[in-house]
Image (cartoon, rainbow over all chains, first blue to last red):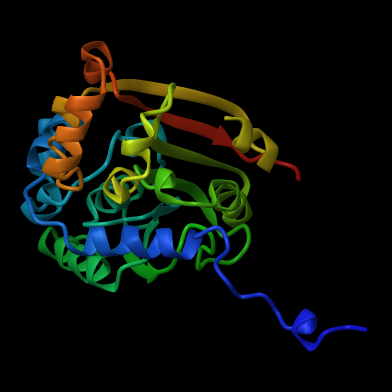
Length: 199
Length: 65
């Protein structure tokens, strides 16, 4: 005999993935501090001059994906986890007025902040969308390039996030993803710290 | 890189490697003072200079799929 509960969808977050994502969101919401010293390591002085100070201060990336994306004028590029908008703005400047950049972030307040930053430097070929790496708010084969900076490591479902990048890319499209790699596990006391996951 | 290959990407490369020690991680506001203190306490001096590394993965979706 089938128990009624066997027919109900199981919605529990058995692997804690939603809890983990919520924890990361909360930590990013609460960021206090100036990250200018990060940007000064990753970006050239010429690039920093073209960027609004507030975007530079909010930079939390780990590399320079735009530099390696070989963006061409007229291309459509999506920045996943756009944060304060530094890489999205740079990408929009690279693809020019015939091209378009799309910044995707899970936090509405980050999107508002990034949009304000783009307005400061008069970059208008950007649209901002709320969404997640595991469910990118774009249709199939709709972009030429996917960039992301220090965000993929925050996803509890990296395989799914990568499959989504593949889905939204046009045939022949490319990715340039800066991310953190651990060659050797850290001690458990550090690995279970939510701050370590968010960082 | 395996996950990228499995998804169907080709011409996969890892570029622009940067080593992150604890002093580098301290620049990131997400790393709290207590987490940094734990790292200093639990990691060997050599590991403290190379906690993680960053790379830029580039790859292409095949032109004909």
